[in-house]
Length: 296
Image (cartoon, rainbow, N blue to C red; front, side):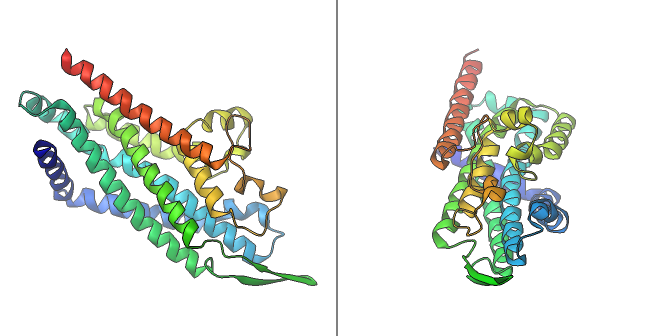
């Protein structure tokens, strides 16, 4: 345990030692938020032109929050993997492997740091998104006058659903960190890492449904994308966010349904269990593969 604590502290110090890296890690999600607000909000409200402005605001704010959170937990996990790639490139892992420190402790230290920083940054972004939702009156009941009729639009979020969203965000951070820390532990070049980061960052948002709902993609792509745990995270966040919406209709069915391999009625608990199972499988494979490599 002492060895693991020492390595975790070492990796945290290394992360904060590079001021440019720290600035990029904390600033990048803010840029993502700004881009979503300026450009992506139109994508979320494009199909609601006939709805009252208050409903469009709720859909825009909720979808914006869901997209930003699902992307932030994923891109953070990818970017934080630079620590293990950097040590791989500088042969630090080779030096550590000849010490009495167990290989499992070395690998676990990178994972723990990835998870801790990912959760911290994602929680900060979540707080900023809650402030944006509050600015659009997403926490209060709004009276709508539409033609000759009128009704009360329920709040987009309340305390229970806010904490439920935070729980899913933490689960997403842990899952993404576990997966990408394992994948990038076998990358030994910063140039290769940069290329992979660029490729993943540019396309991942579409495949996990952060930009466009999964069920609006071509059928084959939608079925394949729905198998990604990140896509299930996005849909779970969207389900919780809009679960209390008073504008339920076929037009907004994607807000209340979770799509999985051709089916649009997967329960939210099934989506969460799927993500947890993927996380458990990732950790199991990671431990087994590394144990076999150690024995060799």
